[in-house]
Image (tube, rainbow, N blue to C red):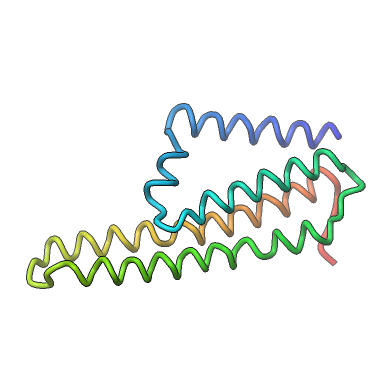
Length: 138
């Protein structure tokens, strides 16, 4: 239980730091056209609270199932973001190479965010289950 409290204290500190100094929540909403990053983050917080309330009585098989699907949820966000990028690129004149290139690079830079959030939430959930409750994959 002490490890769980320490884990959540460090997580809350990092989250508070990102929100206070880097204003991360509006950045997530602004740069991810599909809002998948915010969804992944919300599911991760919900799982963390659930594991904290239930402790050793948590249904770790269900938690691992949800955690293993975080990267796929991120990939769905990436695919939807790429679709939005293609639609956005169809409105830009290809003759204006500077604008075309900047929009394309901007799009690729932000479309990969959901996949990164999915992989990050997957790794955090697995690490949390191992560090706090010593639950391993079978």
